Image (cartoon, rainbow, N blue to C red; front, side, top):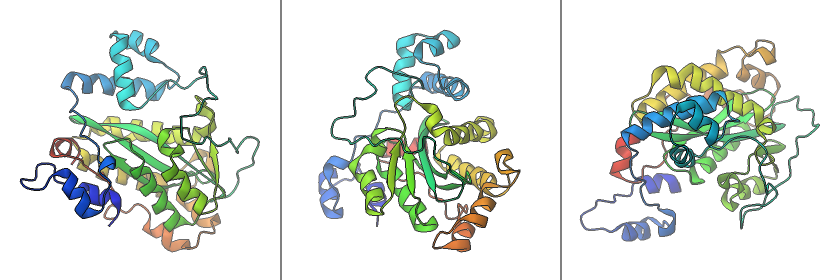
Length: 307
């Protein structure tokens, strides 16, 4: 059983076993089991939806412009943007200063011709609003075909759900020559980069605040939110998981892509990729009964939001 699955089985309200004892019995590090976040206020969730919609259309907007557009207090906007894990995409001071303890890798895609599947994969995390709260979505995309190879939902921003998505993509679709991400702490963590290094994959990272360095996955988020999330207003994590799985299956296999000559992303991957699982990997991709959803719900309080 994977670490996220074991975390999901923790019962913080158990009558006789403390969380520390449960961690010991299941072989989990107590330091890796996080305190459950406080549920968001109803007034905050409504504002977060408005911030997300504006940010999706204008990712270069910072807290000043968002506060002006929405006519709300800037400090409140700053607090909610930190909670949502978003910031304006643009040049920032001290961009060469890495997070302590995390190695920052160079950007390898500049002037590189990317013309075949499994040459470059990319990843990113976005905020997903649901009825009484929010979740985080990570996806791994093949750059040349634009196919979504794997994804995960989580209610926390630790690295475990990103690692789970990466391991699934590697198991189903082979491995890329280069893996590109931003400099988020999930992707610079040793736990994440060690999976790539062990597989012999070159690691590339965007410059700080450079949205164009990972533009295709940014466009994926825009399409997902405008074509699915904002239209359906999912009530909870279960609805969001099923709805996102359905939309990604549609995006991969039915939605024609103009940049691909109106072919679908997965048809391009199928025609040109050389992954070890071949056609079987494509046929397995993102079926509703096999899609992984919220990978860990720390407590009953957060389970009410996302399950």
